[in-house]
Image (cartoon, rainbow, N blue to C red):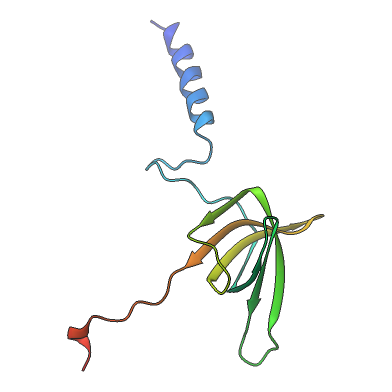
Length: 114
C-alpha cells in the first residue's frame, strides 16, 4: 500500500506539469509580462504591431512591439482597434506577450435614457 503512494504522487505531478499554463477552472493563465501599453493600432504585420497612445498634456507616443509565435492574441486584431499590449523588454526590443483587443463601448439600453 505504501509503495503505490509515491508512484501516484509522481504521476500526479507529471500530469500537472503537462497542463502548462492552465488555471484550475480550465482557462489559460496570462503569459508573464512586465509592462502594458494601450491605444489604437496603427500598423500590423506578421512580426510586429505599432500602437499609438495619447495622454492629455503630452505629445502622442508610438511604440512598436515584436509579435512572436507564443504571443497570445485575444480578439480580432485589426488597424484602428483599441488594444492593450502586455510586453517585456529584452535584446530584441519590446516583445508582446499578450494582446487584448478592446471592444467598442456599448450604449446603455433605451429604457435607461431620459
